[in-house]
View 1: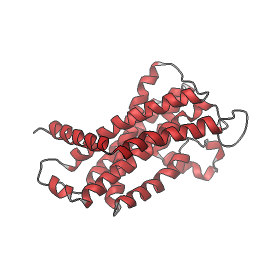
View 2: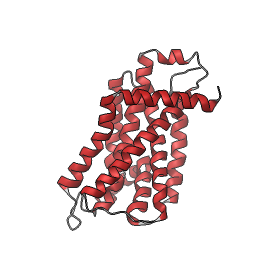
View 3: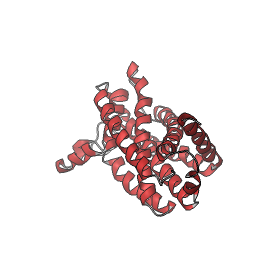
View 4: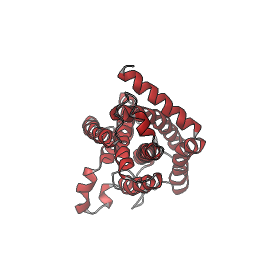
Length: 251
């Protein structure tokens, strides 16, 4: 079997495994919906006020997208590695030609599909329940690319967390520990002007910052986005390489 065939076979198996776990399917799509309802419909943005949620509704579209782009691959890939390791499945995979990089690539492709669908749902909900509007331009075609690249990046990071954690519960704890600070300190929901100046280098070091900046340029500001996509892509390549190395050996 060719490399492409091995990746395709593992991806199909991973997709079927996900759809059989109804709880996972439900919360993958339900959690972002609750977030949009709470922050979008109940809190409402106040453009003339100050502090949090003081920007126009469209400013926060990258934040809503970041929730599913960040949390889902971290927990899903990390938990999958922990589940495979605890069940001895990596030992079984060692008897097949499937490499660690191919395993991670297959699961990344599945996550790109799942999270792409969830992102489309989120975007539709944000436009429906808030005052947010999109800038209609050819650049909107690049939005799915930003989502796919960011998902790949955090799949790589999720693989590292899964390899380091000693259990599925440990993966969830580690994922939340990493994701929550990133979510609110990466130009998603909190504007840089609200942060102390000494913290801004940390914001610039966050991969999620470049996702937020790029998607905001496309959906809200109408500015340049190519540089952010380039940085995000380079970081995704690094994180996927490290993540593939971290996956327990299958050869």
